[in-house]
Length: 273
Image (cartoon, rainbow, N blue to C red; front, side, top):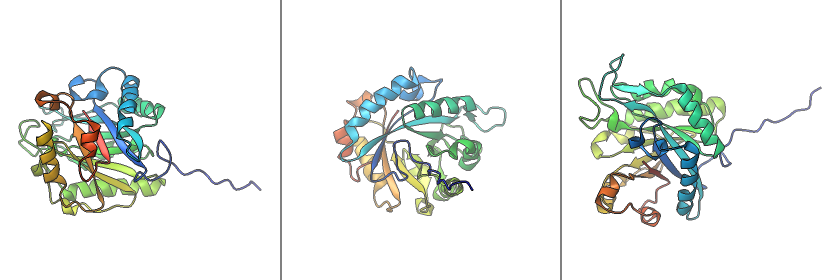
């Protein structure tokens, strides 16, 4: 009779199955074919990973740093494409490349979705085989979710708490089916108008939902956007903060880690683009 061997449960890249309060997430975003879309797309992935690791060391403040690669896997476009949806998906080989790099550096991989005229859940389901992995999560970008007759970039896009909730429920089913550690779902918000009925986004077992505030400009403007968008959040919504190397620097120095960590509530995810 064979001896009983208990298989190890999948864990997060740097250990454990729960993210908070152990970790603070520090990420770079980008797309491999466009430097303008974020730091992660400039130069080699490994060089950016080493740079991110150094930067992340300034954000610990009682927590361990967990690096994040936020790959723009679905990018909104100003043209319709073959199916008229105003978005383009990266090839599966690109996702594989970025996941392999993330694993070399014990980073989380988040797949950023800019759906154009498509919808979030349709685009998310395309990436199911990667989302079934323990180190892959999502970042949803409703600024780029537009309606019929609208073109991404011409208007701010929009989503609802109900749509975000459907994506979170889908992820929760994957976590349960594959006995995965906690999975991250970020939604980026640049202005109040891009997310309505946020209270319809419920708490889901195994899903860590982070609302990332993406205000652009000088420190004062970014902090004002922060206060406006994070006030009165329920306990199951965590906070993230986004910094833009180019856009923010046009109006003054980039906010320092100490300045970012002085925000209240203190962000659990800090992302650079």
